[in-house]
Length: 69
Figure 1 (cartoon, rainbow, N blue to C red):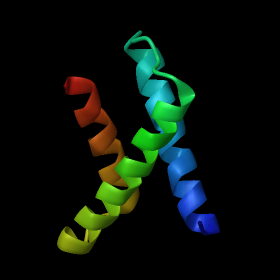
Figure 2: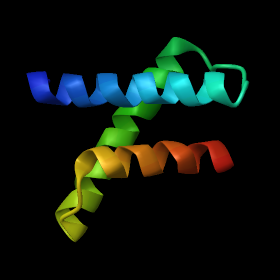
Figure 3: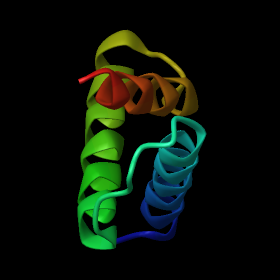
């Protein structure tokens, strides 16, 4: 895994943790959070390729969508 990918996943993970804390939702195990962060980054890359959007904005939208489920 490259440096940039690790940084993207780290950003997604921190944003997920912040959302859980902000909404006072119990956090899942850390391994699940890492998996979710990886999936968010994968989805964000796919959407960015299709739409040409900003990757960080897409990650934020995807994290918010997870919390609505």
